[in-house]
Length: 477
Image (cartoon, rainbow, N blue to C red):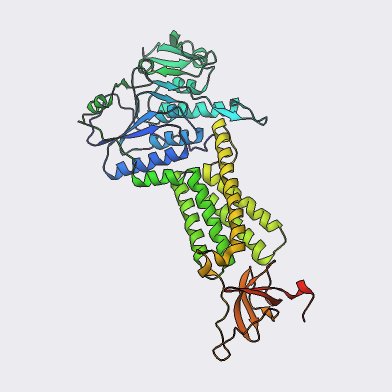
């Protein structure tokens, strides 16, 4: 559930006074925090960098999302050293969105907006969701503490986002007279250093800390109250702040990453592979399949749900299936292993995880499995239709195997039903057969046929020569 995030890197000193910037952009950070949104943000931030931006504002309105992704966004924002980064919260930055905000140089909020409530939950062995165990809470609060410390924010407030029992006290240092906010645990550990000015009412008592904009500014978690984009631009000495809009590529990626289009690409790719096996050597089916699978993996790579692991699993699965079909037909085991690897890669490709950790991920997994089942089911139906009507389908008729042209001298075909020859190549099901020193394209009827096996012509339909093993009808005549 938690990201294997690297140690929080050292960041810039927090800015006490508003900076005067020359080129700023607003990137909208809306909706659930998922890998797709994460990589969209990364693309837009890198584009802003290439255009010379020195101010990056994430306009956040999010209920949270995946913890892995939220931590990674926070650390990504924290490491930006070429621009001033701002989390602007006009409405809400809850759960993972609050975590992501902590990675920015400044947090600016509307007076009634909300931030906080970042408690972690886990999917238990009894298939129920519950609050994360102490080990996970300790790791998460430590990470949040590091994010806050790097930006000069009260670390105890960030911890309380994820620790429902942590009580926060407003204190004054007896030596320096500086006021800050620390946990009750730290206060009790060194009572002679601090004067207790009272507990923060929103903390502890089984509640994950959640603050309004006014409260966040009062507690020094947020830097200032900002009502609208005009005030936001004025804060940094700018006349306006352009809002980054999705490009055609962004729209295309969103469409391609939908379940419907993912399932359609999967279906067409599988049909292309089947057509290639039905008519080997033509390459059209293989090209269609390759195009579909390349588009599938490319779109999910950029969408953030696929990586090289999914590619390797998929290719290994294809290899095992081909071993079953071409080298060890009928052994079943390679095919089962290959099928399992392919399905696993497709599940991970579609959603970025294999085992769900939240209720949202359970629903996502159910949708992904439904998409895969429907796609494979439709493929089976289409494959049956193609196998029975291959030579008569307009799209495939020009790909079917053709018998030799009529002999110019005799004006006859030269082959008859019952003629016996040998498989010149493996028939999977298509291939080459040799009859009386002549080679012809043939199609096996039934099981695949190994090279060198005796075969008999059983029928010639239209432009196809159909053969079967001689052994199937009682030996060589």
